[in-house]
Image 1 (tube, rainbow, N blue to C red):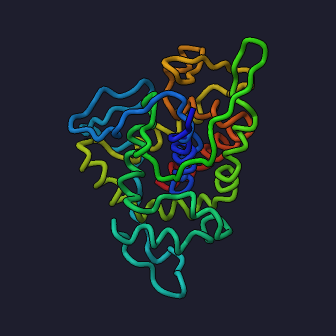
Image 2: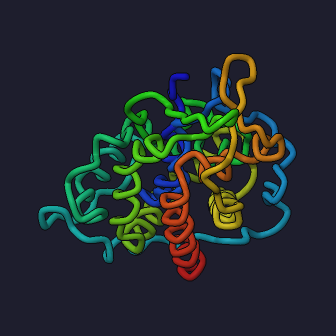
Length: 275
């Protein structure tokens, strides 16, 4: 099985942690096939279980305060430029070392059309699969790896190691600086959400996704896989039907899963406390 969609929520969970680089340590392993196109709603669908509705009749549950431009650190002594769809990638690259303490890791991120991919990633995060297009991260290197124990097929620990570089990036992330940058980019994210036909508040969606990650079942090493239509899926039908952001934790392994949950708790606290 090729893993053309692994990094997605490796991407996503790294996403919010990378700007929320937070939904990311999944999406590049999606054993099941994914739709050809990401969801770009023209009408508001029914919300997934545990996810708040996009009802605009009430105020946002988690409003994002206006960014304090003067508090954003300068780059080369220059005042930070106003963020636009066109310069977003350049602005992220310029602040990368400040965000993560090192220059390495930029090759993991897709900076082109960043805002659109960021919004699509969270919009699709509670589906059972995340399309390859709905990711801000590049693909994980190599193929999906399994191991056979008796008559059981399980995800190999070698497969978990394919996510080490993403986990290191998440571990080193300065979440306070990322949240500050997220506040600066938020008007673009909200506009992108509206352009997709969504009527709700995008940050509420982000917090809902984080809650699903934080509240997900802890993975175990003995989770079995079966082949369905020539592809690996989880043997546990309930797990296979779970949102992608919860299945990701099984796909990246217990150690990476624990890190993701810990950092997402920190991230959520910062997003909520900043209100």
